[in-house]
Image 1 (cartoon, one colour):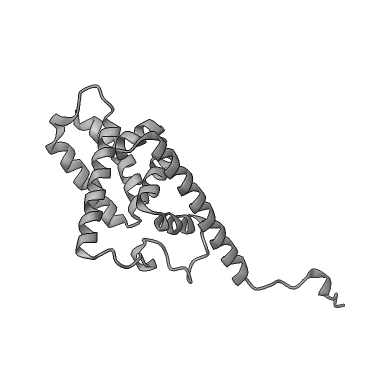
Image 2 (cartoon, rainbow, N blue to C red; image 1 turned 135 degrees about the vertical axis):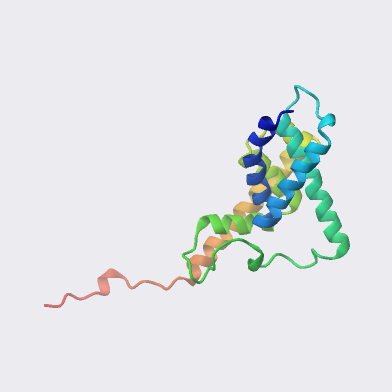
Length: 179
């Protein structure tokens, strides 16, 4: 494993970590922990095997370990608030589909969110995702299907809520022409 090969994977690791966690600082910490683990455990990587898959496996395992630790400490008892996300204030900025998508992604269960992001964001095959997450391919397909369905429902609910709160516009035919 060369430093160059490892450095090439950093953008993909950061992208996945940010989408998985939703907090830029925590995601960067996870990437740093992953790279540190990769450097200390480099002898476990088999030369010629997929470095990207190995790094994502390390990251996934570190993330699961961190979540379990936080659950034990009782830090995940309450759901994420909007203050935890690195997004602009909704009142001061126009509603953005990317912000809604990020919020909806964070409402997915962690196992479904991880599979969805690995398949769609990182363009990994089902087999690679199964290897990274340590579950059978059928479980990956099931989690992906449930995640897509749940995400679609959440996005539709957000869209319906947004259109319900908009002010109704006056019909054009009610306007009179003044001379």
